[in-house]
Image (cartoon, rainbow, N blue to C red; front, side, top):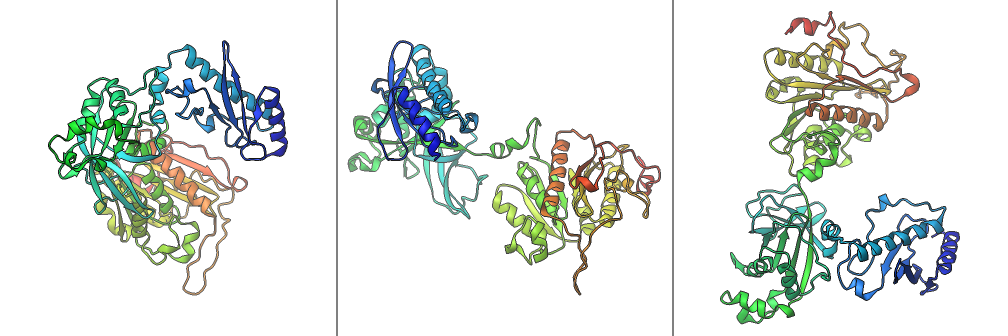
Length: 551
């Protein structure tokens, strides 16, 4: 904490009528009053960080206000910021920074006293419900029903998720071997809120009273949910509304034994409800849509439902495989197949997605294992095979991606692709590669049209590369391997990731039917490359592949 900033803040707060109430302790806490238009409200300021990476904690102390739910304040009276990233303040002006936060709290209290902020409370309702514990939820139906609270096992331990009773899997992991118990979901057609004067319930009686103010006989439906179902005593109920999915659990086993029998159970609960303490619960929804939606930006869709084959799981392909799965490949009814015949060697790891724990394993199979561990709900399959021998098995795929970076092999893949397209197959292809010591990356979309195929970029075997970004194509640094080892081209992992990212962007745009420009170039080493504009390159008149497979 900056001593100079703290001194300036201290002086400013004292001048504004605040008093330090915990001298010598951290964080320093000041008490004073918010000066409103017609009154003043007691408040506290906790200066937790004078660099303002963590924002000051602002608290109102008026019992009449904090005894009910207030928009933009939690149940303890602390002001809720929209988000730390949206409150960037100048650490070099600490007086103005503290003043701006006091004014934010003052404006929020004034708004509460003057205006009807019901809409704000509705929007913030999950935060107002306030719970120490939360569960993840992956639900797909919308009616009153029983669901399962299941234990998900993954390599980080276990977690709990609420799923439909007939769910076979979850997007976050395997629950087939974990513990499970029934809970009840009560569907509410309206927004949940706290009416004027209401606050968070802490007993079952308070919960029922609050629920009955929400309409649709919500309180009665909650009480009737606390019952036996398939041998389970239902003590956990979730309310599913338009603006929140909240819940509670209650210790029903503490009831007298004669009440935990099925007959007369609900009547006994109502009678003793004021003595039954509840624990409020929150949920965080998870789904493939939530996991992948930030990738789509202005696009309408991601790679969900697409059948994609990725050839080559090496320095570019391994990173690309992860990016494609993060973009939705292998979800819905889609699938992604990874093909490679090589094993991961120690010298590969430095610029590969896989780590040292996969050395000696086939690259495609190891990528499948690692990606399935990260994304258990995705349909990912690795194939250990020669790429040229596997092509005929890929005829029904939507997209074939060549990330091998090996020109002779890419020429073979390109010819197979053009043959499929001329035969009426709708499969399309993307090729991605690096130039030299990763000084530039290029990617090409190949469709059944009048634009260039991969071979069109270098139609003559000993000719030059069309749209070559290299200033000096003949200059390339190679390291000659020891006896029994191959020669290799040194470059950093950043080059692999840049090429993979270039390709991934092209694939996402392809999924959204945005095809142009079909040839894209990314300069990495500016000094040794020249500008090549992204463009649609026409078919070469001397391309042997296009001449062979004319439309």
